[in-house]
Length: 113
Image (cartoon, rainbow, N blue to C red; front, top):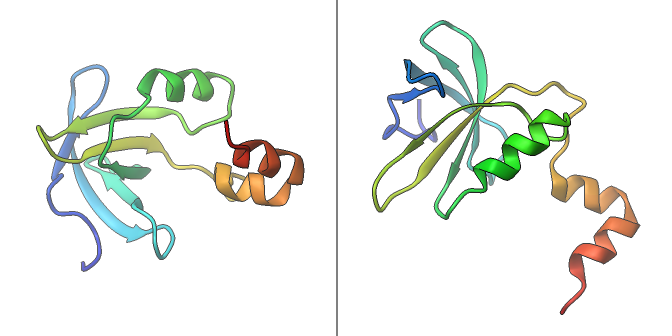
């Protein structure tokens, strides 16, 4: 399938178990967020990042239902990182979308220091 990563054929969950990865589609035209399936046919959300990732912050937000629960992370030395999460439902929205819909948050996020 075109438009999906091929450099991450699998990932390890936080218990150390390896899971095969099948990317299904891109979630958003210009994003690096994908719908995928693991080797057990469970649907998951995958984000590809090219910078350090705040894994502990994500875990904390997940505990408070403010981010999808992390399933695993796969890193490539000097390359991108794949963040694997439980698939979110239609009620989820990105922080960017949330800020655009709530002017108070949009203003706070655009302040210059």
